[in-house]
Amino acid sequence: MKKVISIILSLVMLISVSAVAVSASAAVLSPESTTKSNKINVEVNGNETTEVIYEKDPQDPTKITFTYTGDGELEGWEFPGMTEGEDYIIISEDDNSITIQLINDYDGDVTANAIVKETTTKKKKSNDDRKSPKTGAATATAVAVAGAGVAVLAALRKKSED
Image (cartoon, rainbow, N blue to C red):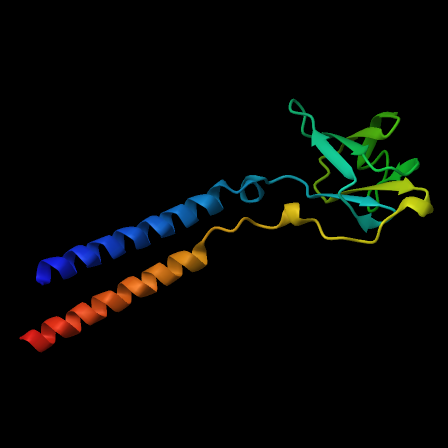
């Protein structure tokens, strides 16, 4: 009986430690936790959107290209909270894209707002891409609690056998 309880406790502890290790590594490998640059927000007519995408230049992360992918007619771009010539300069602008470069070691948030004709805009919707990943911390906690419960039961049984 003692061997069976020992094996069960070992398995539960192994599972608990593995679950916690996986959760910790998922949190460490999360791209949001390792990125330490400017926060970039994208909008259409002042509302958060998925119709604007951006890409940083791999050789120069201060250069950012924004592209409007929606169906509406793009009239222009604005960057609220930033001043052209002080915080950024426009490198190029064509069709539905604009490339800017952050200057003077600008370290604030970057918001790119695509100005689109009003008849095609959508209501503000949340961007699920910015949510942190589910790491399984709740599962790891449940397994750890179950392991502790088995350990307590085994200890009580051993005490009652003596």
